[in-house]
Image (cartoon, rainbow, N blue to C red; front, side, top):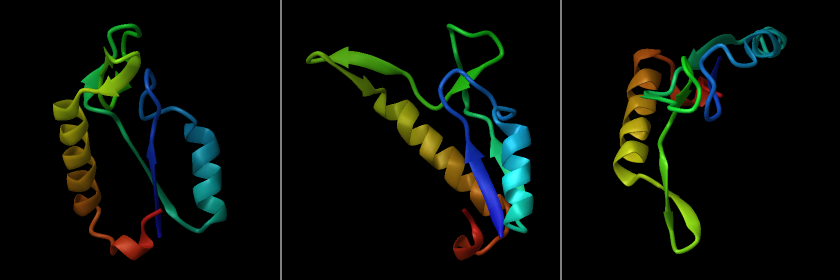
Length: 88
């Protein structure tokens, strides 16, 4: 089994690393953390999965970036060569 972590906005692949490594060990799983593909303007050295824009008093995802991130995550998970049933 492998535990895949996707960090939050304005973080990086090291976020919660120590805690997640312990969790993975407790699950007898390997641990992988992916870094989002877009740099966060507000926080140097940090990343995000997609930007948002204001529309009808709501912050919506930039569709192209959202789609690109989904594709990136899919490709990275496929590189792991694990059956999808073994990925958490």
